[in-house]
Image (cartoon, rainbow, N blue to C red):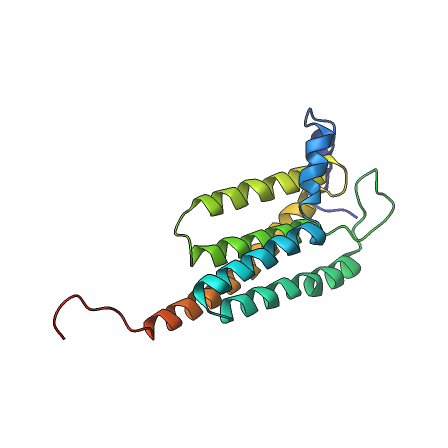
Length: 186
C-alpha cells in the first residue's frame, strides 16, 4: 500500500506506540470500543430515555444506526484489506477501525438520546474525551494506525448526523402534539 498519508501515518503511529502513555490505561480505553462494553451502555441509555420520554422512535433510530456499524465496517475492511501496524502485520482488514466506530456511534447516540432528557453539554464533552481516549488507546496498543481511527470518526459523524436529525424530528413532532398547560383563563 502506498499513498500521501502513509509515511505520516506510520510515523505518528510509531510515536504514539512508543510514547509515555501507560499501557494499562491505554488498554482500558481501547476496550471501551468493544461491543461487549459499548452496547450495554447504549442499552441502559435507551431504556432510561424511553422510560423518561415514553417515546419509541428515538430508540428505534438508535438501534438502526448501531446496526449500520457492522454493515458498513465489514465490507470496507474486506474491500480495502489494509494491513495493520507492526504488531498485527501482515494481517489485513484494519481500515476502518470497528472498535473506534462502535465507541463513537454508541456513545454518540447516548449523548443524542440524553440530550432530549438532560439539557447539558457535559455529556457531549465527556463523549469527545472518551472517544479520543479510545482512539489513542487503540493506536498506543498497536491495534490500529491513526488513519484507521480518524476514518472511523468520519463515518461516525455521518451516522450520528443522520441519527441526530431523525431523533430531533421525532422529539419535536411528539412534543408539538402534546397539550401545553395554559397560565390564564381559556
